[in-house]
Amino acid sequence: MARTAARPVRRASAALLAGATALTAAACSNPGGGAGPGGPQDSAVVGIAFEPETLSPLLGYGKDGNSKIFDGLLAFDAGMKLRPALAAALPTVSADGLTYTYKLRQGVTFSDGKPFTAEDVVFTYRTILDPRTNNPSRTELDALKDVRATGDDTVVFTLKYPYAPFAERTVLAIAPEHVAGRQDVNTGSFTTRPVGTGPYVLTGWSKGEKLTFQANPRYWGGAPAVKKLTMAVVKDDDVRATRLRAGDLDAAILPPNLAAGFKGDKTKKTYTATTYDYRTVTLPTHHRVAGDPAVRRALDVAVDRQTMVDKILEGAGRPAYGPVPTDSPWFAKGTERRHDLAGARKILDEAGWKPGPDGVRVKNGVRAAFPLWYLSGDRLRQDHALAYASDAKKAGIEITTQAGTWEVIEPRMKTDAVLAGGGSPGDPDFDQYLLLKSTLGGDGFNNMAWYDNKTVDRALEDGRRTGDPARRKAAYDTVQRELVKNPGYTFLTHVDHLYVVSDRWDTATGGLTTQVEPHDHGLGSGPWWNIEDWKPKSGGTSAK
Image (cartoon, rainbow, N blue to C red):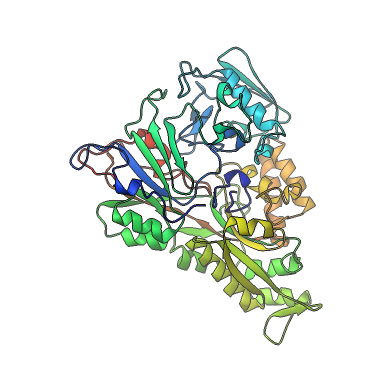
């Protein structure tokens, strides 16, 4: 989750941190060097909320694809189906599910002109698996026993056990051994000045302000028509909307209430992406109130999820009862929790949490009170936190909301609740293992609640160690039903992502699209997930 939740690999400088003064220089000149008004434009300036901490695939960047600088062996198409990228075809899988063989695309070079080979693939995966590499998503490759090259154009992966979603893990970005292998993997210059095979080349990175990219003329898929791409890091939602309206940005992600302000603007279009992106409250096991199972169960039914969807998201989302969205085939039917304030009060009464003179419940001299942190400048988190605290108060639980940066929040996560975010499309292992595995409590932004449930631990291992769909479904049903008994987190909503984009791109070939998106929404997600395929309209103007 990035700093926004329990998934450190998505950890951006602020939920993946940035200042609201982003892209000052780019706002004053045509950032793409286009032909100017009346001529074809070849640049795009996109407003994002967060920036990555590193651009090295060896440290987690690009593990879910769409990295722009790099490619994986495979990639996801618009419908989230796997397609070949650096591989020439989908892998050949052995009958026992333990061997995956990839034939590589011929003639591919890195942006520095050096050839891409099987050894780069082997180097990437082996380096990530090395315990000395600071990659927080290493456990996602736990099934991988060995990777080897057989010649320059074939890579063979051998697994320890059948891991059904392994092919989806091979969208992971590939790093060049001739660059990254000659420096310290954790601190070398490659982390901020990467070299890849992707459609764009990084030309500058002003931390907290912007990342600039130029089209890669050597790109194996053909040089992009959008020659210059600028990712403007604008942390504050209101500032991002203002800059979009002023013409400083060509596109931006916005919360529903701010996106609605552009409905009457005929020069812009709004795109909605369905997501696995949830908002949740961590209930730390090590807090004597938030760690109490009765308090957790009471909060789980005291919260009015549908009202949050209606009022905060303005309908752009769904109630969440766990990391798995309700419309996923992996969702365990019957685990929905209805809003039941009377039921919440009864749970607390029976557990010995009695109302005090000020209405706040007390048990053995301990008040049912705890703080809830949310990220400064994030309107959606703030609104979710305030609504959650309001619902809790009606049950007799006092929650004090506090805003802060991740530098302030992170040291407090073991004992303080956090309004977090996370989620990843595809296999349930992607979401649930890092979020709930007890051994990952305290491991960066994994298992932020320090959730500890042995039944869940066993089910998580069962789910990832078999290829049998029925056994996997039973395992993840067990996880979701255990979360009803002892939540550990209060899941609130799954949030649709809304993007407002200037209408200056040629839609004759089908128009801009969005994928089903993860929690992360920045460099790799949004309508610009395939910006290398965009064609500017003749006569459009870019942000200035």
